[in-house]
Length: 255
Image (cartoon, rainbow, N blue to C red; front, side, top):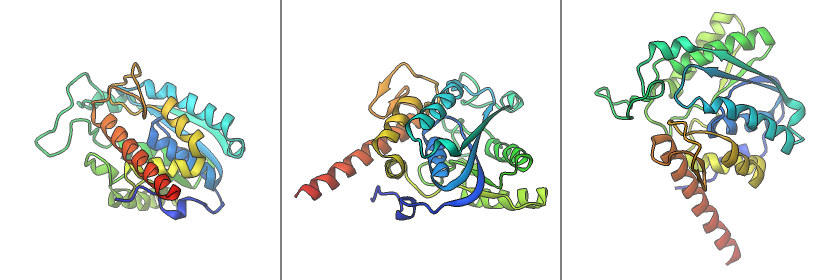
């Protein structure tokens, strides 16, 4: 298995459009934010408070944005406003391990009970409404169909259909970009390494949050988290695979 991000990500062409990144404060959305900052003329961010169990990620968002602006001066002028929306109703109508204190387990329908029905559909719909008002024509999200839990609202076909619906419903072209759609977690680490080097990956390790349980009491080589929930396992395994691949490449170069 290759862990290198596609070569097209290494040197992104400048795009004069403006983008709105669905930014949770996690690894994937931070990778997407860096990708967008490297590419688009202006980039704003949007986050949602939906009563998530791991709402510590909302605090991480501000830290990540500040660190990106401070450590990457080439991106700082492009980083625009941040928007935080209250979607408490979503948490109130959900009965999931993401919005309630319950054990994470598989359901009879084959999906884990961390699936919040309609979450990404709502996120992108609200994001599109805000983008329309602010003159932004690109929505960027970290949805992925490679290393994921089978969530139907993360699938490429779902998001392509939503892009059509949003553009028709707004009577304005709205592009939905999902740069991580076909990347493994190891390739996501490789992508951020290409975009911002060791500094960006250290920022991701130190400041982002992925753990479903909201645990920031334990720091691992790959970042903070309980280490046992599905999100932590994916992040850890991806990191370990990327590091092993990187060491193998360095060894081959040295030889």
